[in-house]
Length: 459
Image (cartoon, rainbow, N blue to C red; front, top):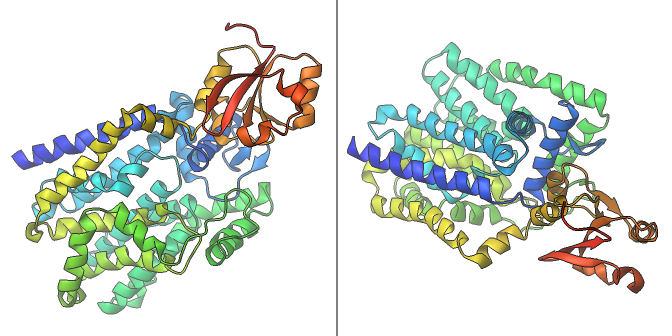
């Protein structure tokens, strides 16, 4: 009981630290601010079928589940960093409590799995990031755990959760949720001679049918989505890291096998103990249903992405749950487990301490235009961005920032309009000298500055 209280205390500490970061760190460009702006636009426009990346511009790259959740959150609580990130935190907590409840029969302290999961660097990071990966990971957890429970004993509750998991996966990130779950389940089924009817269960179809209405509606309202999302995002992107058809992202040129580096770095320090167990106990793992199930779940995702050069570290997030369950499974026989637990808890605390240093804080905040927009918001003047506008500037200006070119900038000055304009450092020298001399640099950050023209004192 005392140990459980200790684990609860440290788990609560990590949740507080993550919540603090969710509140204090600005939305960073490009990915997080992009998804936050898509959610803000959904909340503002009331268009819950077609996600938009700008007014009237559809976003075809991902399904809407995570956007729905963030849009609901800011619709209820308001448009700020904490509330747009809140669904990711809630889903992360639900995952922690779900697996802790599930392994309670192992006679381990309830909050030990919660603590281990939240202490994994990759999971701790994404417990507060606006993205599709947390909802995908939650969906995959539902699919895998529900399937395991159904294989033991058929249950209406677990059948329903299995169907919900499939539908959520398809609405989180699309068919990749099936790609990351069916192969390890198929392998496990073959190994332990699971009847084909249990493996190819009709629940897969029910989950698909539950998600299908949205796919039908978006193709009807935004023709071209299906071809872009299914063919482009799920095939062309996988085989070609420089895919020219990408409308929203940027080329992710990574060396083959980098996913394994991401896996090791994202699961320090527990990954080393598990690798030792895998090598030492391979024979027993092969014959143990639960261990083989977890290892298949854990290893399939990095194996699948080994041959892809177009990936980022978030792709390993779905394997944080099986890794945690394996640590708990081996817990009583793990060497140096308290030392490893101490290291895993210390990493988030170290990050919190480092954020108190001004240079670190400024480096993090430099990846967002929040400060520039807040400076402009203190005045009654419109705000523009020269040539390009960031997603963070769109979010924090509530969509009011407008993109202009050099001719429009000169026209605004000739008309003697009062305004602010964000200009990147590499573009300031392309402005005519006469125009540049009329602009006043009022706020500078890494790579860009906020300039004012004919703006009066603060309101």
